[in-house]
Length: 443
Image 1 (cartoon, rainbow, N blue to C red):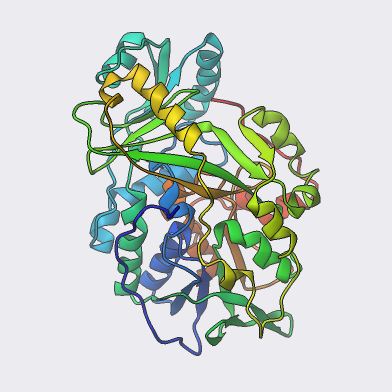
Image 2: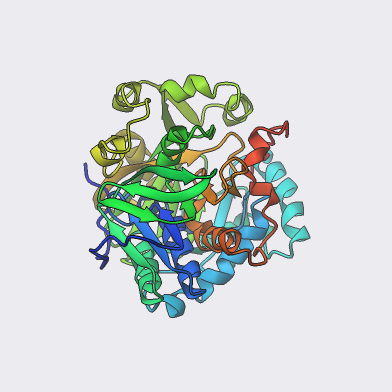
């Protein structure tokens, strides 16, 4: 089943022979990195093996939030929202960004207690997050008939349109001077005297001294070819969209059985954050210890089993010589089979709470593969063993909203500018220097 339709993106056709920086991956992190580099006058080329935004960047819920984030992500999420505020003007396009508020809806006393604990973090950062009671929750869930205990509410949290945002940012990056090529897989990196000297693409060689790897779910395999151990796995989540619905809440919200987000087309994006599948693959065993704390914290929210991906990766775990096609060219776009049953159950649960959804037309169901790290916090970092390489990956389902901020930070690391936030929490070395794995408490 194909993923959601993306807005058209104009791209470049001629592979350059050299560039200051090559960015690998055309999701929201990659195009945002290209935008900020190009604005600084850096000669940047972005290579995407498939379509811009074709994977998780267009398949996510469309939330742009600070609320509920790991304490290490909060400063970057705040800066990202500031960028989102002016992004449409900056790129001359429409990302669908709206500050319409987000609700974490409390169904139990435990929910209220967890939310109160996180609220202390929010207050330390001057956020407008607050706990609200049953009446205000009902008022914000326009048309809802089900009554909840309350909610954690952030009025300044926002939404945007995943299918339009990446093409819009990419167009802005090209207008600023970036060159963007699609259908151009990067097979690997060449080094000279211990430093990056070029990237090898399926279309030829690009001489460069700096590379930003923003490959999402593919980053682990790419790093493996460089003998870099990046502990990252993939988790599938399924999303549904409806046709236009009259009335209903304007923002977004989530309970234990459904999440919703109003779309610009008048419909709703609906999903369940508690139903995610991890397909057992060779990396599941290679990173068993790394992900042990996460498995304990996740409980039943991630289901483990076999799928087509299990068998695919079993035969694609070895490095391929750079003069031959490999997995990056064989699989242009990750398009996993969705769990339609879980998506329809989420819509049913949402419709029981908000009757305006009972007659909503289901227009599409799709799935995406989320790149996750052991602590569910991204890597945005230089790699000590490979000067010139910046990794920006492992966004663990948080990447769309934080994407422009992450791209800014990656560009800062490349150019040596003062970082937009302290990059230390996102350092790659935390997985190898003995730092204990820290898992954020539930919200």
